[in-house]
Image (cartoon, rainbow, N blue to C red):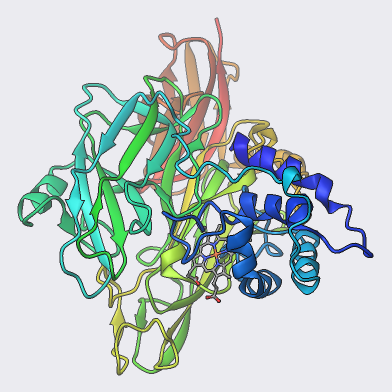
Length: 525
Ligand code: HEC
């Protein structure tokens, strides 16, 4: 990440575009190409040709011009005008204009002695001293005529729960590893699936074939290591198995891969970051079921009301092949709309997990919305069926899904001040100032539904709750760990708090297993 930032800063000098002068490779273009293109366009990269020298770039100058002025390259599926996300792989208007003027001016080299060095391709791991590292066995891709999605299981054998604070996928063979999804499995199912499939790993397309497997993150070409903010981590239960699902595209036959995962782990305690598909094809479709008849185009809507104030750090939309577009936004309790992500041209091969530039505060009552359009006609070049066939919900290549994962944690005051990416991108406009206004709003909603007294409390806390039905009252400490749980009868219940460590706690009311409200309570001497 630091390296990218340096590259970016180093390019700023080139922005003083003098209209009279033709830009040169040495002074203007090399820096742009080396910082935005060469990570994929190198001899071992996923890009179809190398952009690692003046000669390379000169040879492809018209392609370069076309791909950048059309904004086809670098690949960045989210629409930056909908929401500007962290670490956007985008060229600025100035950079595109420079490339355009350079090609139109004959693509001169300029003074070669001023040229920056091409980037080091086999860049070392960003996590150089991982707490845990695991690699798949050397795997030779068998004879395939189609894309292969292979899942590899790596046991962790930890005897205590851990928290992931750093995450880095190192593809073993960059020519054939197209993307990687990383899951955790706390059952034995992954090992069973592995045992039932000859050779290392097992094949599975959409998910990893295990209902309860949890997504931990992913990798697409050009992605760098991810680190969680201070004191937050993704829980990795003891004995969890790590599953790497690797996509090897057509043409990988006979090649060998040994992809590795590096993790930074903490024993905690720390705030737990959860990754959940809050918007999904099972519980949140308003016009489901997810079924797209042959020769039709259909848009589905999903919706979910957030029961408790959360801090959201990232978002990961997921669908399969015939999906054409996907977008998500949030409507806050005060009526404001917060754009989250828009993928106008969905491409299964470029699905990423995206971070927001700063965490978002979504108060209780915020409604998440998702829209996805599926084109199941012959006009869709990605349609796996010719002629088109009815498509249902499922994990196979020919099935579809509609998920939107969110990385979140219970909201703490000022979480939204954390900075994930503050690079001065020209399109950077994400406005987090609304969050401060909403804070007071949230308190008002909470206080209506739960009354806790006295607050601060010392030996005993009484809870009154207005809602209907049997409710469970739970207390969590500031790290999100449950410390007490009681049934609330007759909408009122007292609990003994004498044994609790003094400090602030979150109080939650659940009915029918759903979290309906939270508040804060202080336990003192
Ligand atoms: C994240 C990886 C990645 C980055 C970064 C990237 N490319 Fe590409 N590029 C690809 C891949 C993969 C293809 C081939 C598949 C495709 O066309 O989508 C490609 C194709 C191309 C093509 C051929 C397009 C065509 O019409 O077929 C050009 C030209 C190109 N890239 C130029 C660039 C330039 C210039 C940059 C930097 C400004 C860049 N790329 C950055 C991955 C990348």
